[in-house]
Image 1 (spheres, one colour):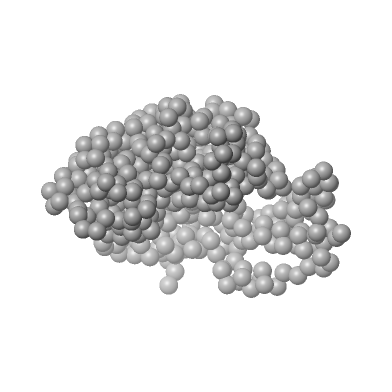
Image 2 (tube, rainbow, N blue to C red; image 1 turned 90 degrees about the vertical axis):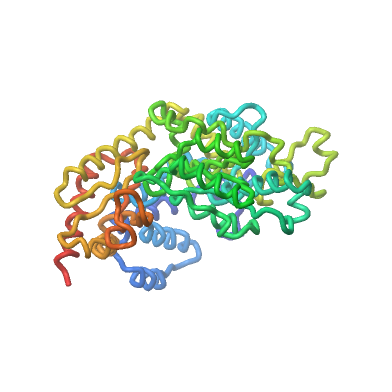
Length: 495
């Protein structure tokens, strides 16, 4: 048997992995040394051509060669100047735990494929439900992330609300023919997966009503009330309100209690997308921002954001287990009823997926290792960094802060001498930083008609810092902002 044919499990699995892991670790270090920064100093075309030329020697060398190429060609969220996205540097203990899952390869679609993992996921979900503020009647599942969790929340909303109105089981009969048009309500700053979910659920993206936001990109509760009232007045059926706890651009948190009251008043489901902001639950300082979260019918959390887990580490929770009914499935080869009656539990009916990785394990290991208090210190450190960086932007003569950070992200821009060139210069300076391998900075655009901001004209493009590395220093942030300003000056003075 060759090295490449060895298995990772069984009594001999650890021995087979040991030399391969040494090769991977050496190659990771080699690739990072060669990159020497947050991202390779290459254009997309140059990098693609370079990776096409990667060559190895013997079969045993390919693992190291390709791993080194991957590490060199990666954006490294552990580098302090890689601060664009909700793309965290995972904790080493979580990565090590993830390796154990990869080696053993349990699948959560039946107990007999994942005995211990089934127990651990069930226990972890109960712990996370308590963290949200749910009681013992909660239920949930590990997901691939916020997009899947949001789809699940809106699917249950569709099935429950439309089923209650029509007397039919929507998951069996499909959408009612005729009758009031279903509507969902989300802020203008809500994640795009809300509209995608509406399309996948047969409602159409146009079923989602965009509710205006304030300057911090927080849903306007008055505007939501008006939108629900007007929709009902047109004879439409409000199915769900989607509140965001931590928008991707500013970390804004919608008024959760008001959203819950308005949704309940119209017989609609409240889903809270807390994929980013759910990390605030770990912090005594920030947890009060999520007041009202426990009133939601369903919640999305992502621990591969402010939880420092390798992807994927999404969580979907519902407040009442009985609202999960339309997802229940029985497959005789996976979860026969007599097995469950005999005490062999199945998680198949909680997920949209069949084969499913034991992603709960790394989260459980991390929580046992650091505890809520330890993870909370990391959240607070990133929040402190965001506040420092925002203050530094505010004090810089060539940079403009959009709004104070709520969590660990904020928007700003390079202030051009000619306002008409603002969008072009800010977009170009970000690409310059990427091309030079200097920094990874985010870019977005403000919604049209935002209070106090220009409409569709110049000035909508903003740069974004998303600070998820708790080991970043204030000196690192000063260096990052100097690089942004220098790139802006270079673009502004160029052709």
